[in-house]
Image 1 (tube, rainbow, N blue to C red):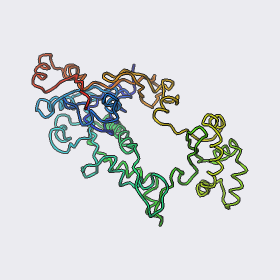
Image 2: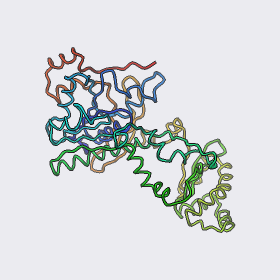
Image 3: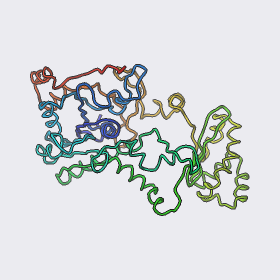
Length: 415
C-alpha cells in the first residue's frame, strides 16, 4: 500500500532516543530506513525497559519498520559498503541521519560528499561545539528541574528530574523535519547540505519559546515550584473516594463556568471571588486563588468515586483526566488499545505479542497502515547487499566468512 514517503531511502547510524526516533518517524510515513549496527549490537541493544527475561523493549520500540544491517565498520570493507549505501545514485537516496560524531573520518560529510555531490546528512550533536550532552544533562541546565516537584520554600529548593526524555523526543521530530526540508530543497535546487542540530539548542529554544528565558530577564523574582498547580491558570490534582487521582484544568472562561455547573460549586466559587477581591474571568486571578478554589473541589471529589466523577463531567466542557499507572493505562484507557487505529497487536521475535503504536499522523489522502515490527539485528543484511547494492551470493558469502557482515543476530539477554 502506497504511503506518503514511498521512494525515499534513508541510511541511519544511531543510538539512544532522538536519532532512532527521527528515523522511525520517517519510516512510519513510508520511507525505507536502513539502520546499520555492529554485529554484536549497538550501544542501545540492551537498554531498559526490559522484559522479565531481560530482553530490551526499548530497542524494538524505536526501530519499528526499519531494515537492519549488521556490519563491522572498523574494517575497510564494511566502511565501503556503508559509503556505497549512503551515496548510492537515484532520486530519494543520498540521505544520511546520525547522532554519532562525524566531523572527521570516513563517515564525515566532507568524505561522503566526494562520492555524491548532493548528499544530505543530518547530524545530531550534544552541544553546538560538538561536545557531549544527553537529555538528562541538558535538562539540568534549562531550569525546569527547579520547577518540578512539590512546592518548597526558597530555602529548600531542590531540583527534581522528570522521567520523560522530552528534549530527546522533540529533537527526534526535528531531525525528521530537518531531513524532509533539506530533501525538498534538494529537489528544488539540486543542492545537498550538512544539517546540524544540537540537543542543547532544542532545549533552550523551547525554553525561550515558552517565555521562561524572557521571564528570567525581565522579572525580578525567580520562579519557584508550585507543586501540581498549573502556573498562571488553574489546575490541581484531587483524590477520589475509591483511592484514585485526577487532574482538573481551567484555561478558558467556558471551562470555568462548566466546572462550577457540573460540580454545583458556582455559588461557592463566586463567594471566594468576592472575598478575595479577584476576578475569576481572568486566568491569573484563578491561579492566585488556587488554594481557595481547590478546597471545596477537593471535598467534592473525595465524596465520589472516579466513575462517579466521570459521569458528572461526561458531556460537559470540564477539562479533566484521571491519573493512571502504566498498567492502569493499558487495562482501562480505550485510547491505548486496538480500538484506536494507531495501535495494533504485533508479534516481535524473541519477545512475543504486544501492543504497538504506528504513526500518530493520519493523512487523509492515504489509508492508515498498521505498524510494522522492529527488525532482528541484521535481519536484512543479505537483502540490502544483494537488492540495494547488487552484490552476488558469492560476494556476500565472502563478506560473511571474513566477519564483515552478519545476521540475523539473536542477541542473548544480559544477565
